[in-house]
Length: 274
Ligand code: NAP
Figure 1: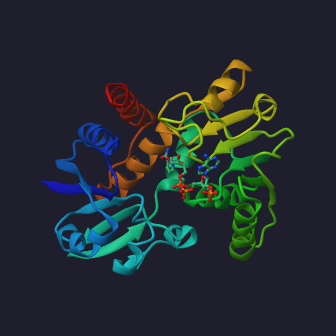
Figure 2 (figure 1 turned 135 degrees about the vertical axis):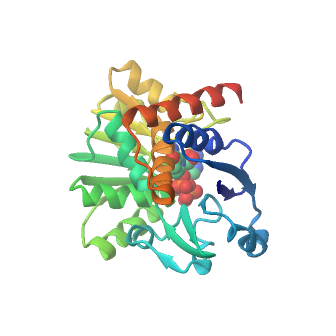
């Protein structure tokens, strides 16, 4: 039997166990997946235990902190400067990043294209990944953050890494018409469900709106888009997509659209229980 885990802090609301259990069951993988809540100061001791596993996922606050412990790093993890999946081979750690695969899978399952004029809300870790992927896909990208300096810092990083120019603005000032809006901020997430990162007029004019938040499944942002007839998707498919990509790295298993939707369904039910 293989053993996998998620390290992060806090992990109280994590849906990873139910998602990985569903994926492993469908793939016929003999494995278990547990949560290992690890405070920042406990990471050095946790690493010894992690070496006995076959692989583990990494979430906040360890996505960058894990880097010094790795024996190898994938190109994507290097590009994003963050690791969410580690494969363990003979006690050695190989770091990868599957968040981008989850993001692209979430868009694909919703029938949304990462192209044309894209407005990205946020300038943190998930926004960095989405911004780099949008530029690699050829989109005309605007990064909107609550502080213009944060948006400009991410734009400068993209210029340095990909030699591409992107637009910047504050969330308050974001206006215009976009083919796709992506929310990579926690604005609107439980318990702050009455918040929305953008003005409603901007949301209602968009072609599609993808919110990385999945709790609640319909944020205020998505509700505004939905009531204006705009195509919407929440972050559950992205979460299941990155988990499926991690399973592929660890076990070589390949997942169909139905497998990922089954994991999304199980995660949605778990969320309702919580
Ligand atoms: P992060 O690195 O902490 O970045 C958060 C970003 O959101 C920062 O730009 C921050 O701005 C901004 N922000 C925070 N609170 C805000 C508010 N109330 N209004 C406007 N902007 C706000 O976090 P992250 O890892 O990028 O995650 C961002 C969101 O994506 C979270 O909701 C997370 O749950 C979600 N996510 C989902 C998935 C998935 O699989 N579905 C994967 C990754 C992340 P400042 O710099 O000004 O604080």
